[in-house]
Length: 613
Image (tube, rainbow, N blue to C red; front, side, top):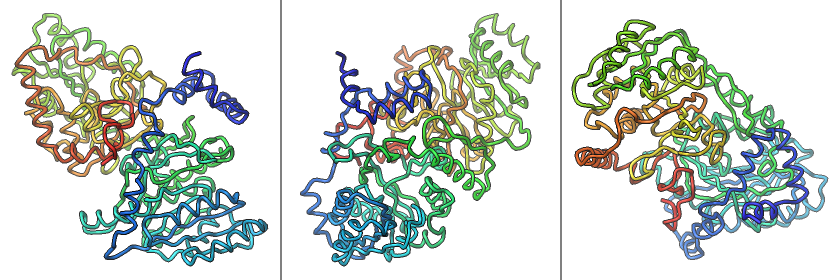
């Protein structure tokens, strides 16, 4: 019997079989099998021993307990209760009482007054002066019960905890430390903080499915409530945005988080597993089908958020539970200038252009072919055939190959408000690819947008770039099969990243001019990464959009680094990147998680350090 089958059998019980049938009905056989294979695939670094190694040790917790705080920040933990099983209640409260940070209060609101056992248990817990209990006359739902608990809170900061979940013993210490650290670095306290989390079996026997999150990514948040737990916010922020809104029942926390991020002065991510989400047959932690209505509420929450921030966008639910797509309509009919470097490769270029002409739904574009030292008669005959037709213009760069200089030269001839850098070995798949990228680039604050690229065998070539992977930077999910969505569905979600490949990258012209174009000292490698990082440095967002899909036959024109001169040049470019971007290489990509591997491309756990940075 295979190890995969054995793992599956160990997980089978009546509940999982019933849930599997519902998933099969929801996804259909093909997609169900893809998601099943993702769930039972063995972990490269098993999570449970990794978690044991990385959790705070007793020695560390004791050090935290004895730390003196010059200006301690009182933190209120608010918990709405409703028919809470007594063992869950005890474990939840114990997880707060065991905090290594002592400056807390626990505000419990009981929305099930008819539950006499729960009421008696709460009376006994209230003997602890740090624990405050209020029993409502009747259940007001999650939003109403939580709001009642929020009104009890007196702390400078407030954290949300579900009645059957657990905090790690160092959760509040890490939050307080992050607030102090951020205030020292930025000159002000952050108003919103969140942590990483995992799931735990009902009997606490096993931790699994760690959610290792990026720093704040507005586009990812519009695609999925990745922030979720553990959420802590300043009282000043709560007073501005108000409490939870019952109109979004089931996604009231999603709506609240969206409202908080719109106005928060400082958003801080603490990259440690500090919250444990308990699973049960009723919980969305392990059975998202149990609260299908919540996903429609989530859709409405995103729509309301877009309206508040002044963005037009059509929101739709994806098949993956709790995931959404926002389609941004293009305003007007701006000209897009497609810039394609080329040397020889007549058939490669022909295939690229034909796919653009035949498949692209956006019509207001021009194509600038930058000819660079071709040698074959065929390519010049092809230039005569296309130049001046269908918006195609051929311009000539007769110096040595330098990807940055060639693109800068081509863009000098561009007339469009938006530039689309495109390799000659690209073939269009999705007809609205250009419209998708344009919708993002038109948004205020967005500098560039990148696409999802496949190899010809339908495995992934590019789904965004992470700084630090492979030494300097690398694409994620390389070689993953098309149709798989990867870690936390990240491959299939719109999100902000530090970089995308210029093999297919749309750039807002004003952003291109603001940073001075591509760095010409980077002739071959990392020029797109450097360009994106300079956009980020200037305050622009880089958006990855998986709905713009294309094939990439990859670097046919340039060839490989097969000479000593090319190898030296490549090493020089590596050194340039390591010098210019030393800070992000040391501190880690903000859109990745420092507990994830830099030697793998699939969001595997990082195993060579005791703790993440």
